[in-house]
Amino acid sequence: MILNPSATRRARMVGFAMLLVTFVVGAFSGAAFERTLGAREPARPAARCSTEPGPFHATPGSLIIDHVDISAEQRQKINVILEKHRKQADALWQAQRPTLRAIVDTTREEIRTLLTSGQRAQYDKLREARRAQHKKDGCDNQKEKPAS
Image 1 (cartoon, rainbow, N blue to C red):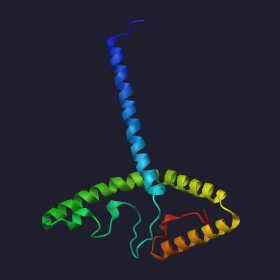
Image 2: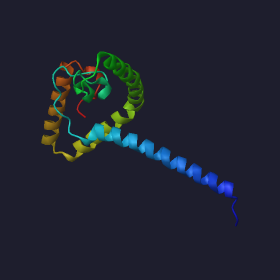
Image 3: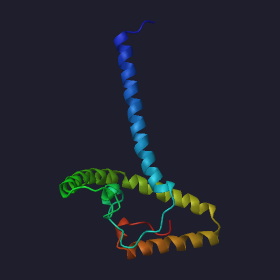
Image 4: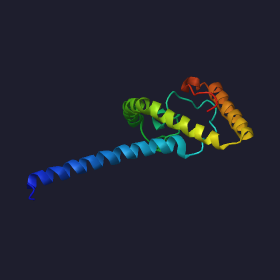
């Protein structure tokens, strides 16, 4: 069976494009998964709260660029860039939030099934304390489900 060279080339290009798209989607998903579940949740510093996570919502002084000696004009231009990309990051986060929330909830529930009743009570108490601190910090807009 002899294949047309242009058909072979097209099939390879389509295959390469599909592989590239798969890689990019996998990279973003992996990064989001790692951010959500991969690390221990650090204690939240007081008054460090925003409606969305990530570097685009960082507190003043927490970005690397904040420690570089830049002019006021450069700072203004950087702020414009950050604001532009903050909107993009927020849109991506909002689109993925339900999926990530479901993964986190499922993971927590699977972990709870491995615990004894005493451990589950301790786990639930710690989760409730974390939610209370979150609410106290003014970050209660996350709408987490109780005891998950």
